[in-house]
Image (tube, rainbow, N blue to C red):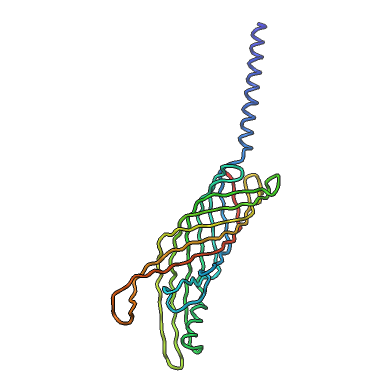
Length: 257
């Protein structure tokens, strides 16, 4: 009987030890920082360089000016933290920049005089981006509440030369002209983006971010034209290089899962 009680007591101790081991394992698993994260951010998109150039010359296909105004951009990203300081990321982005109607207004009045009456309709540059790359994180504080992060991304983007149309009439001479330029779809093109920003850890799984990113792409549009126009002749091949350079400044939030 004494041996029975000893065995039962040992068995209870083993169960109690197993219970505490399982409790410790569950607690550690819950406290472990998740590796995956997702984030979303939105903010203004500032055209840069030739994409920002608003010098319309009368033939859009003969120059590289984007005539783009300040627009808006959105980023959605999902990533995996390989180590505490770096990881990989996949990003989907969209930006929209309206063409500047004043560029066409200036061209028409410089060409036909200030007395003309104009009607101008412009549309948006719309750029869809799919990029992947890596990121690096450097904490500013021991508790990792505030940290600096950088991203280097590359991928492809899709856009098109926006449709525009204008009409003018001279009230004095009744001379008039109308031009309608249809949207030109461009092929998928290589693009890249370099980001730098600050991240604030609001809770163990939720953070806020402010980010600034330089985006660049150079899609090429190939077309046929008559070099001897208006005289009939053989068509020649030419191409227009589009410089899609912009600075996207965004704010948003993310969470680990």
